[in-house]
Amino acid sequence: MTLDQLKIGKSSRILEVRGRGALRHRLLDMGLTPHTEVLVRKMAPMGDPIEIRLRGYELTLRLDDAKNIVIEEV
Image (tube, rainbow, N blue to C red; front, side):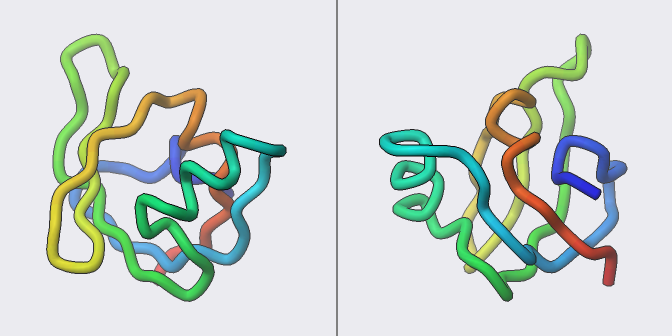
């Protein structure tokens, strides 16, 4: 399952961050690292972007970026 499939209010744990080059490094730099717990807080009216909570802060991600984050539901 990937982060873009997680429903509002659900928590999950990151298993893997996919992608290549600058995209992968950018996601890792934002704190999206394996074993980190995330919670989907909000979704834009059209579904893109989503707002997640991790490591004590909120982060907004585009769905295309969220598809690169493999998760397991907690």
